[in-house]
Amino acid sequence: MKLRAVFGLNVQRLRRERKLSQEQLSFASGRTRAYISSVEAGRRNATLDTLEILAKALGVEPQDLITAKAPERRAGRSAKRSTSPATD
Image (cartoon, rainbow, N blue to C red; front, side, top):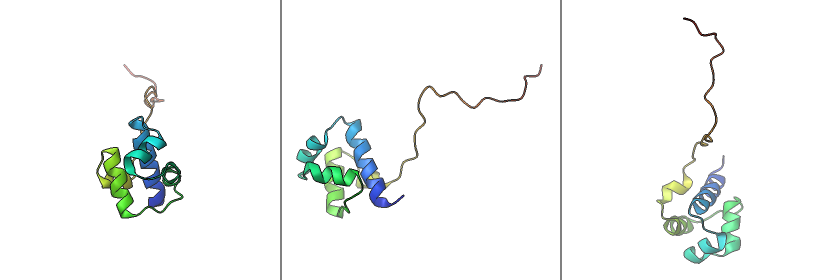
């Protein structure tokens, strides 16, 4: 996955975890809502300054925005069951 896409998905994930709208994040960062939307969609090639500003607005370290996260397993899924019969 391209770094721009990783960055956008992390911004979106962290914004949602903090229950912020794009508009609220735009106010906190000094960027427009349209810009935040474009970053999240991976259409913007953000500068290092913007990376730093968005990290601060989201309360994370800049590297947290550019590090790919492994997909989390959803709760409620059962573990893989063995197909071998039980022995006594």
